[in-house]
Length: 196
Image (cartoon, rainbow, N blue to C red; front, side):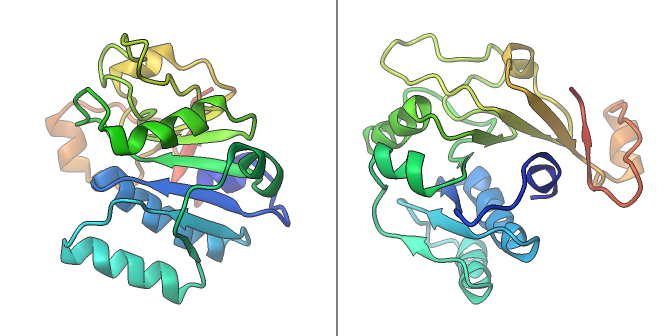
């Protein structure tokens, strides 16, 4: 949320956060709530909810922060005219192809839309190491902003968007030492730092 606020101005148009069923979707649920607190209007599209209590609580927190949930994905024309940003919080680094049929229309819409796209950790459908999908059936997302969490994944070498942030100020020093993570200095009170 902070990387979005540092990159884009608030708008009367809302940000649409598209959440998947796993950890990446959980990141999106949290992000939407924080965007709301930072002065953005956020909406959530969460087509495949899980019964996991943690995610149910994240839904409640978003709802209590005034974030509405959409029942259906808006048409592309609406995504381009009624939203300032689209957030891809669908699949994370543990994604294994192929994309389930339920998510193909969502990925296709995000890939073909002209509204700026933000991806959390890795673009959905990308392989964590090799990058964009090799299958022509899988839409290849090309985000404008990539927010890498903890450390950029190998697939970030294939990222060609304008903005790349690292969110990782939360990494405990012992963990950084154990995995030899060399993290940049985080400016002032920011929880993220620009990498590009």
